[in-house]
Length: 107
Image 1 (cartoon, helix red, strand yellow):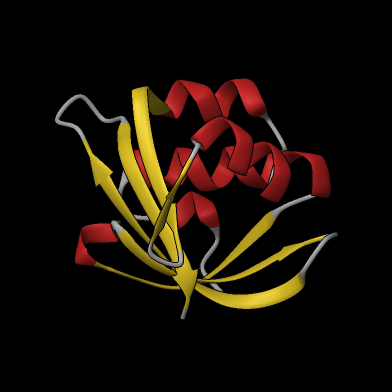
Image 2: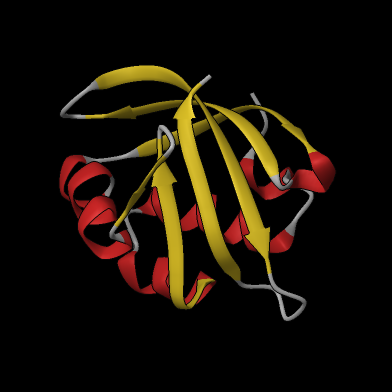
């Protein structure tokens, strides 16, 4: 596994760190206003999805690998609702270092 502090892209590093800390405020600071996301190819409401899939159920990202300059991850993701599963994450990052879109799904 890759320690989140060693992730290449600073915005992705901050995203993973915020998720693992359960820190909603830090997570929101990483995103652009109006950031979008998809789960298994379907667009979702970011606030609703992250509350349900991350923050209210102890979501945690154990990063197995990274690619595309650190903007594509393979993660063993776990939460109290679904248990653990291997997932793929892809991030669009703005020039000022914020995540404008993230996509996740089964790896």
